[in-house]
Amino acid sequence: QSALTQPASVSGSPGQSITISCTGTSSDLGVYNYVSWYQQHPGKAPKLMIYDVSNRPSGVSNRFSGSKSGNTASLTISGLQAEDEADYYCSSYTSSSTPYVFGTGTKVTVL
Amino acid sequence: QVQLVESGGGVVQPGRSLRLSCAASGFTFSTYPMHWVRQAPGKGLEWVAAISYDGGSTNYADSVKGRFIISRDNSKNTLYLQMNSLRGDDTAVYYCARSGPERGTYRGLDYWGQGALVTVSS
Image (tube, rainbow over all chains, first blue to last red; front, side, top):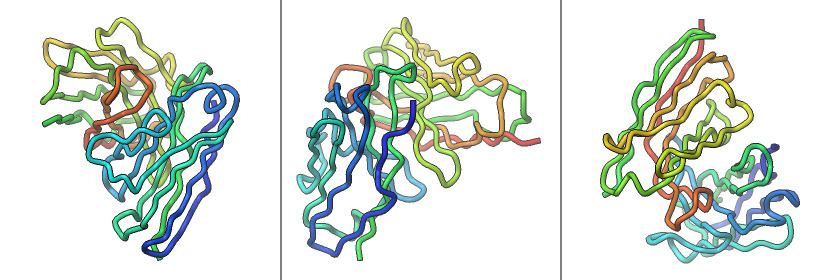
């Protein structure tokens, strides 16, 4: 099972909105709504930001939102802040022999 | 509060074995599926294995299938990862993580440990 495909980097200025894409296949994103997004700051453990495509866990800012269309999921960060600078990973359940897969990761830079 | 604390990491020679532990507290451990996820130095996240709440069902990534064994002891609130026939590409920080916040093994991982570094080198 190959990793889901994400852009290597995305950048934006404070206050702007950015969107990170996550492309999969008909074995994962195309058929399941078990898409999650994780934020990871350097040297820290990942943090769950979105689950089930568009749900935010308690305590996560509503500046983070998720969506999905076909084989592609997206994470949008609105009102970009300096603290949002981190690596972001999508993930999904898959019907392959490896049942859970992460994306390749996207480095978000706040200009 | 929920806490997951990994231990057992270190330097090990290729072909040898190592067992990681993850001590859980702050929640009813026996009712949650659990996972191991690893991250090689400077690389992305890679899912390794998952186990059901009662240990009756396990799943593995193809890259570790047949070499790693995930298990749990609900009486000790502890998750384990037995790693055998270790190779250089197994070098990584290994995180334990809890399935959540909704029921279901693969809907999200809502709490993570701080990670344990495993280095496979001669």
